[in-house]
Image (cartoon, rainbow, N blue to C red; front, top):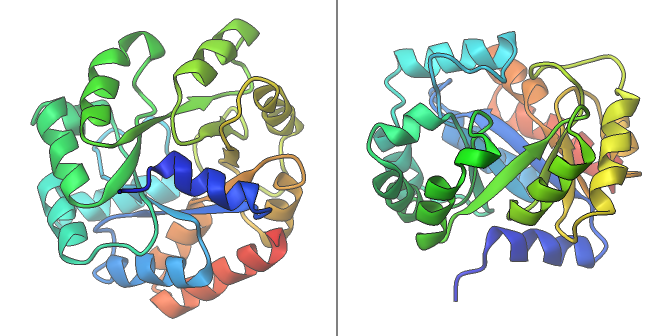
Length: 257
């Protein structure tokens, strides 16, 4: 029987481990799959795989650059799914992309393609809660869980609704900004984590703005886990080898442990 994303992350949390999710952009470098494998070897509990879109509204300059490179290299939904099918990850794979990428083939066909590639979760930051039904229905039919995001500005009633509908985990947005590394954590993000943990038994993981091991450790003092993306992608785009990127991720793992 296939283990769901939620079951995998809950089991790790309930065993006393803090969760580490590493993000990279599929196709942004020729060796992105080697880097994905290095993240798993370094101890991530899941890999967030970016599917490039031309207008990534949630992403800052580093991930936008990665998306541009990926699109230039032809990293379409089908190409990335084929790559993951040929070389499955030894950890849960969570796709992060935008609605238009999945609407083009249709939600059902896109979900089937992703599921065949071993994807067990998906994050669509531009999909409003009020428009979630069609995607969540298609995703769930193929064993993919829909991970929802909550921001520091989200009203209490909407936090309740997000927690009721999210699957896999809740993504706590650490600051009111696009993705990117920051020198300090935003206390509003940490307060959001506390509010979410009062509302759900799902793991609560904070991302956006986490750049260093010390920050990751501080996040995990209040959250179930941490998501790190731009700090990984920046190293990839700068030409660091998969082993070097994995070494950085290993410092995150050691810090939160």
